Image (cartoon, one colour):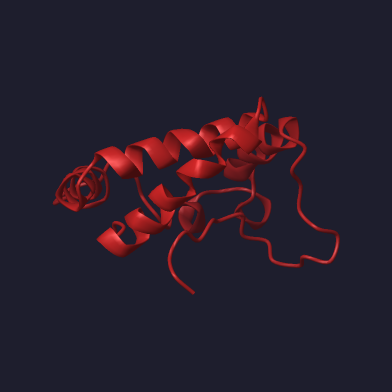
Length: 108
């Protein structure tokens, strides 16, 4: 589901932390998300979600596509993402046992 206005407001509220980001690449990326959250209404997010995830045929983005892709434990599609995250100094914790590399961006 696309973000609701409450989530967009929470993201936008972090804008004042931009100065603390300095030149950290991940922080710069986050501040880009903050700007988009501040400057686009919920309707635009819904339209973008529908355009990319909802389709009569094959949608542009398949949320559970990794479940259907070939490869040892379906991990091959995640290799490039993991390598990109490593360039930011991010990696899985040693005690994490889940094999899925998905991200959850919704409320807990």
